Image (cartoon, rainbow, N blue to C red; front, side, top):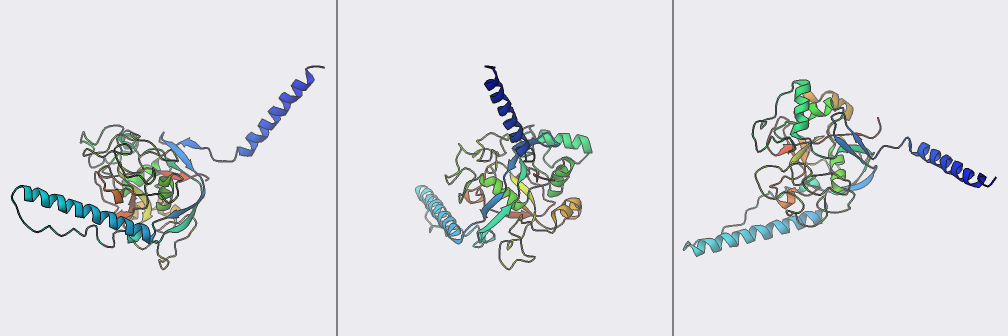
Length: 317
């Protein structure tokens, strides 16, 4: 009889555990392993502020002008020290005056939960894809400084990246998914790690090629190399005015995507010819290209030593 209370407590705990397991059985796992053997991280559903405000763009231009002016002064002093006299050169206006207009206005976006690769796709993973499918090799496949197993694969076109993603049962992330994931849960910050200026503790700042993936600390979602490694292809068509209220067709607040229907795009990716978005700054990138809101586009056939990719997929079928 004395054992009954203990048995009742044990049975109650077991019952509660069953209820807890049942209650969470339909929820997405925090991480999964993709068909290509890559770990994917769950990014929770929610809203975030996408893009930049006009004030932020003004701050960027102020910083650029300060840097340009300092460089001009330094070059002038160096020339003067060598006995050369000439007027201080005019400060370069590049990047162009409208370089960051494609980031405004800042706007609210809602995204369903999705998975995204924890790391950029590596040469080792891409090799498995080539061996399994006979797909062509990347442009810089035989260059030792860029073809090490744990380096991010580069020299792949948007079509190459999509071919890999489809083979792996995934797709490229939408532009909104990429920025949401890159922010890592931070609100209103410039970089994946916050507002601190990029330095060698946060990303590679030296050399002529990317470091192995995961060489630096992850962001708040546990994702590595969202800035300071290689640029990453996204699924969307690049449109400089995509954030503007008069953009047509109207870009939805919920799970926005530029370029038609996502499922149709994935099925028919081989026929895509319009510019595609790439995101993220490279190891040799200047500060304004390392920001999570920075956006650019390129022809889908482009293959450079600066562009790689990572994959994504919806959390629910």
